Each structure stands twice: as structure tokens, then as C-alpha cells.
Amino acid sequence: MIPGLLLILAAITSGRLDAADWHLFGPNAPEIEFHGFASQGFIGSTGYNYLGESKLGSFEFTEVGLNALFNPLPRTRIMAQAFAYDVGQAGRYDPVLDYALAEYTFNDYIGIRAGRIRRPQGIYNDIQDVDLGRTFVLLPQGLYDARWRDFYVSLDGGEIFGSVPLGQAGSLDYEIYGGVIRPSMDGGFALQLRNTLPSSVHLDEIHPADVVGGQLWWHTPIDGLRLGAGGEYIPWAVFTVSTQTPAGLIHLQQPSDLLVQQYSAEYQWKAWTFQTEYLFVNTHPEAAGVPRVSAFSWYVSGEYRFNKWCEVGSYYTEYYNENFGPSRSGPGSATFPSDANQKDAAVALRFDLTDRWIFKVEGHYIRGTALLQDNAGNPIRRDNGWWLLAIKSTISF
Image (cartoon, rainbow, N blue to C red; front, side, top):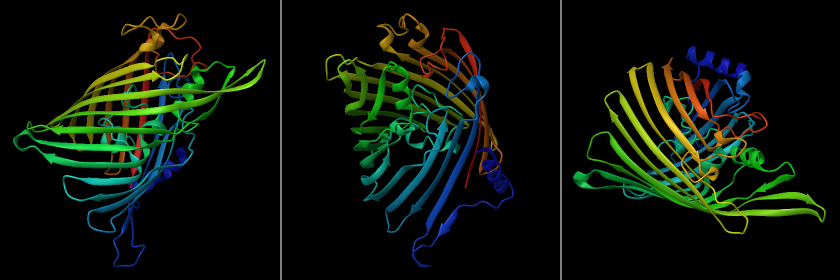
């Protein structure tokens, strides 16, 4: 993948790579705009393998996308994106239809989208692939895990959206959606399942799941300040596993209801941007013997743009897996207490080398191992601090 990215970078710096506009239906018809991006990253760490074999230094950190936009009628948009990624063992460059939707806006108050749509959740969920839109290489992983795109980003269904003016109180943007999510067998959710299942149990299938949810953004009267709240509900027969017993091969389904809540705040002032978010995930068992899962994460961040080509940012984030105990830090498991939580302090530098080419370098100091999700690559885990270096270069056209 790296040689291909270098060729693209060479084309960009020479000024020969531009977005393509095609008049597919004739010279007088609306044009179809084609855009794309490619990212190559590197992750190196001390102590533990995280997001791949990072103790040895891993280049398994790649994203590639190609998208198209068409406005056939007034207030109408049709757009789609093909996407492939590789983050450690997740993704494996398998191409997917990231989104493919039709959108019609009746007026500022109401519009509709249908097809494979992006799920609006928090500040970044529906723009995770837009590397130009953020300072950091890795978003806070307790909320935006780079391995879980197949689970969190898209759904097949529809959405109602709009904006309601509130006079001197600002305005309120809303999005209400429903449909079906289709997790992949090589995505982050499947990897986590395989990591936690006993060796005698085989993951056979991850079932599609219905989902309903919504998000509100209040653009307050304070210039640059917006506050958000969102949530979703997923009633789900989560997955099917099989295990060999003396009576033969047994297949079991694991049912659960999943409730997600997320709260966000963002303030932009001059060259500064400040953000904070809180995510809570809770499952309720539907059958005897199904464990309850509860986890939450939060972060605070600040970013400052020095000029058009340089930006610095920092965040602190914590993630807690409450399955490891009743308290926030929890006693953890008897073997690996550090799996109860993970705390991460990060500092990042972003350089806009051209309008289409950015380069980022980022350092992390991390305590805890709750998000490693790789028992085989981390057979011993302790509550010691460890370091991570992330580098990423992205081109777009």
C-alpha cells in the first residue's frame, strides 16, 4: 500500500491530481463530482500491542475511499462512497459500500435521507473518514475506536433531519434515524468477540440488528458554542456461536438489548477549539446466563491553529469497563486487573503541507489495558504506564 500512496503524493505535489467532474448524462445535465482520499499511518508502542503489532512498529493503519456526489434536481443529492481500511487485524482491505443514499430537503425545517446512511452520533462518528476535519491521528478510542467502523458508522435505513430556529435562544438541529446495521466478520466487534470467547467456542455469525436513534444539537446564543445529546437503542440477537460437547455440536445465540447515550459540547473561539464528550453503553440480557455489559468513556480536548499550515492539539480520555467491578476503577479480573480501565493523554501536531496533503504526528502516554482487545498479542498485562507513537499522512482529491 505504501508505494501506491507515494505515487499519489507525487501527483498531488506536482499539481496533477484533482477532483473529477463527469457529465454522465450529457453536457447540459448536472455533473457528477468524484473525490477520494488515501491515508497511510504508522503505530509504535512500548509495553503492549495496540491496534496491531505495534511493539514491532506497525504500518497496518491504512484508509482508502472513493466517493461520488450528484445533484440531479433542486434540493436533491445522491451520494455514495466505497471504502477499505486496515487497522491491525480489523478491516483487511475488504472493500465495502460505506454509504449510498438519496437526500431531499423540503426546507430548513425538514429533510429526508434513505439508503445506506451515516449514523449521527457525537462530534465525529459520521465524519470519521474525514481526516482533514480533525487534528488528531487517533480520536479518543473509548468513543471512536478505529477498529469498529463496521459497527458504528453506517446503517441501512432512513433519517429525518432539519433545523429549528429558536430566536434569541439560537437554533436546534435534529436527526432521527432507524434501520439495520450489518457488522462484519472481520471488523472490530468480531475481533473483540473472538478475543473474549473460550478457545473451545467458535464464532459462527454476527446477526444484522435493528437500530433506532437520534441526535440533537443546540447552537447556543454564545457564538461558537454548541451542545449535543444523542442516543440509540438496538434490540439484538447479537451473535451465534458453536461448541463441541459429548452430545455433539451445539449452536447458541447470544441475545441482548443495547442502549447507547452520548453527550457532547464544542466551543470555537478565534484559533481555539475545545471539545468534550461522554459515552455510556449498557446492555440488558434477554435470556438466563447472558451477562450484563456496561462501559463508559469521556474526554476533554483543546486545539490551537497557529497558521494555515500548523496546528497543535491535546486530549485526555478515560474508558471504564464496569464488568470488572462495581466501582469506577473496578478490581478487574483476578489475572489482569488493568483490563478494568484505560487512561490516555495525547499530544498531536498537524501540518498542512498543501491544500490536499496533511501530515500528523502524535504521542500518547497510556495507563491500563481495557482497549487492547488482543489477548494473544498481550499475554501479560499490568497497570503500568506505556507509550504510543502514531504517525499518519493523508491525501485527498
